[in-house]
Length: 157
Image: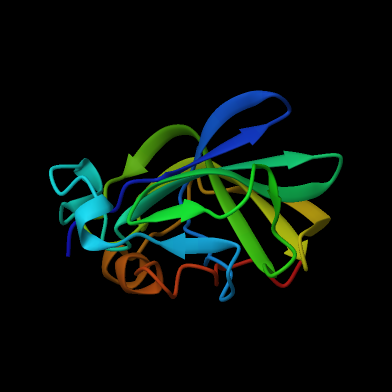
């Protein structure tokens, strides 16, 4: 499996990448487009985007929002959409990439900002330092496949 495109996160007013893909709500707030409405030539239909969409998210006033989406979905109402359906940990790479993993979101960076979210509200933030750690690239790849990437070492924060 190919390394996956990162989602965009607006954090403290600045765009950064998020090595993680939060699930979308399972209700009518996000709508799947009909086949004839989708740009089939879009980059989101490559092997680097198994989810077939790219989201832009924002943390503002300790709340997590979906502010834009491209690909096979669209927001049903005007953004931002408060992500009250989401509980989990966001993984934001920081610094230089130490190890490239050609699978999921498994590449390893000097450090990672992990932001724990409970029903759309930030409850804790921790920085994980990956320098001088033994990294098993195969384990990192499998642990970060789309759909499973919400569980990282150190997330019992």
